[in-house]
Structures are given as structure tokens and as C-alpha cells.
Image 1 (tube, one colour):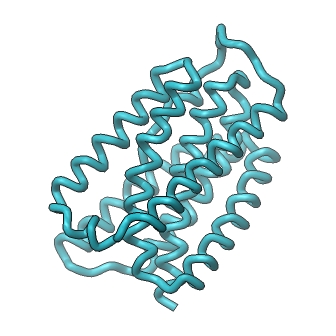
Image 2 (image 1 turned 180 degrees about the vertical axis):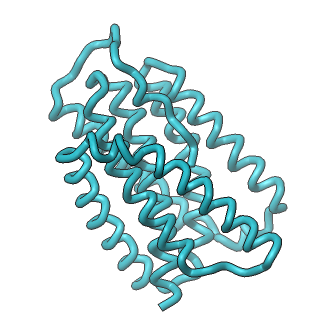
Length: 219
């Protein structure tokens, strides 16, 4: 997971917007990210992506993501942050394209439904219990790093993958959704912060979706 420092902001010299407009902006940015992902899935042949050299693909993926995170972290201008957000959305969308192409359409739709439902629940919980999620933030980070190290070791060294890892990562990102939503409502409500918060939530939700799809795919 790429870390965002947007949630450390406690003051601003930018114009404040209403809570309703702030939340709507977050929702619209999330919708845009998912819409772009859908366009990439529909219009790009996954076999074309698989034909790209693996190292070239992943270097480009990480370069784009880190550049996007840098843009929306460092900028106070909504348009620049939105551009940075798109530098994250596109490489994530290419990964989604290659993953969903391996599953039946009905399974993908089911994964989308479950992800949407779980996300809604975590947003509600994040609004109701922000202090709880703040308390477990350190545990979430440690757990995520530990699980990813174990996963990489199993895949690249042992050549295996245990099912529990997908469940663990899915639970961790559920926690991150609640945590990031709680933090999004504790920082100054500006247009730029809304875009930046949406970017962080987008990464949480997409990671959750990919794990849920893998879990459903095994059934």
C-alpha cells in the first residue's frame, strides 16, 4: 500500500467547503477512478498487457503510482491532485484488467457487489468509531507489511500461496477503509483534501476488491 500524508494536515489556507460538498467530491472522485478502470478493462486486451516485459511493466507501474502519490501529497491545487490521482488510477486499472480477465463475468460482478457492501459498512463504522480505527492503525500497518512479506516469500521462494493470506489482506484493507474515512473527516474540508482522501480510499477499495475476487474465484 502506498502511504499518503494527506491525513496529517491540520490547518489550511485554502477555501473550506461544506461537509456535504466535501463528501460528494470524494464520492465523485471514487466514481471517476472506478469508471476509468472499467474503460481500461473494456478497451485493452489483457493479452497485450501480458506480452509486455514483466520488469518493464512493474517499473512503469510503480513509477506511475509513486509519481501520482507525490503529486497529490505535495500539491494544494485540486487539479494537480486530480492529475496525480489519475497517475495512480491508470496503473491500478491495468492490474485490475489482467486479474478480472481470469474470472467469469458473474464472479466479477459478485465481487463488486460484496466490495461495495463491505465498503459501505466500513465507511459507516469509520464515521461512528474514528478513535477505534485510529488506535488500531499501527497494528494494521504491521500486519499488512508482515503478511505481504510472507506472501512474497511463499510465492517467489516456496512457489506456494496459502488461502488465508487473501482473507488476512482483505480484513486489513477493511480496517484501512474505516481508518482512512475517519481521518478524511478529521482534516480541513477543502476541495484538494477531498481529492487526496479519495485517492487513499480508492487504493484501499481496489486492493479489497482484488482479494475478494481471488477468494470467490477459489470457490
